[in-house]
Image (tube, rainbow, N blue to C red; front, top):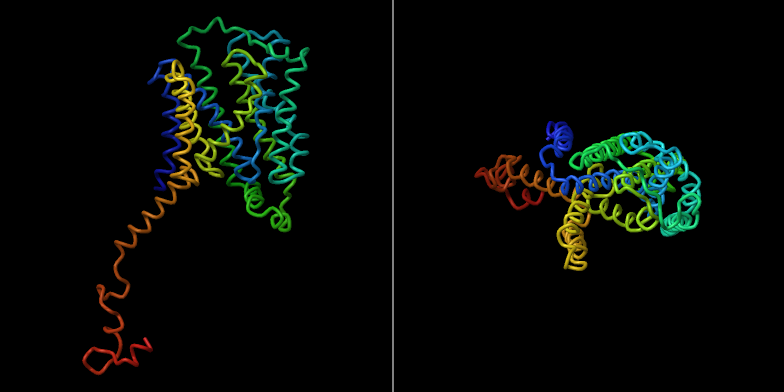
Length: 359
C-alpha cells in the first residue's frame, strides 16, 4: 500500500496528460475542462473551509473578480486571442487575492453562522457592483474576450484542458504542502477548538486570513480561465451563487478536510452534471438536475462522511478483521479454556473452583 500511494499520483498525472489524446471528442474534452476547473476551485476552497472549519459561501465573488479582471485587461490593453491571456491568469488570481484581504478580514471577525451570512453578503455586493459599474463592467451586457482565430476547431479545447490540469495540480500541491506544514497544523487546531488553539499560541486571526487569501487566489485564476473558455463575462454566470453551492457539495461529497476528496467529488459530480446536461436537457425539462441531485443524495445517505473518509474506514475495518482472523491464538490453546490448561489443580490437569476464581 505504501508503494501504491507513492506511485498512484504519477499514474493519475500521466492519465490526465494522455486523456485528450486517447479521447479526442470535443464533447468529452469540454466536460473534462469543466471538471478540472471545478476540481481546482474545490481543492482551493478546501484549503480554507476544510482545514479551518469555517464554511465560506462567497467564493463566487473571487471567481467573478478573476473573470472580469482578465476580460477588462484584454479589452483595455487590446490583447489578441490565443496564448497571451493565459499568461495573465496569475495576475487575475493576485487581484482576487488582494480583494479578499479586506473582505476576509471583516468576515473572519465573526464565527459560525454569522461568518456564512457575511460571505454570502459580500458575494451579492460584488454581483450588484458588476451590474451597476457600467463604465468598467459594461453592465448586464458583459464583456467579450478577443476571438481566437488561429486555433482550429479540433484544437480549441486542448490548451484550455492543459491549463485546467495545471491549475488542479498546483491547487492540490499547495493543499498538500499546507496540510503537512506547521501552518496547516495550526489550521487543523483551529478547526478542532479555536479558543484552545489560541491559548496554545496559534495565531488564529492571521492563519485564517492567509488560508482565505490562498483560497481566493486559486479561485480567481479558475474564474479567469473559465470565463476565457466561454468567451465572455456576464454578471449572471460570472457571479453565480450556484458556484458556491457546487464546490461545497463537491468537497462534502469527496470528503471535507482531505486531500483527494475535493478532486474526486469534483470529477464525479461535475462530469455527471455536464454529461446529463448535454444528453438529457432537450425535451426533458429539468430531468438532468433531478439526476444530478439524486446522485448526490445517494452518496450522502450511503457515505455521510464523504467518499474518501468512508473508503478509508471500510479499508481499516477490513484490515482489522483480516488481521484478527489470521493471527494465531496468543494462549496457544487452540480455542480451549486457558484456565483449565494452566491452572495448578489436583494433579489431574483440572483446577479447583477456588483456583478458577483466582484465575
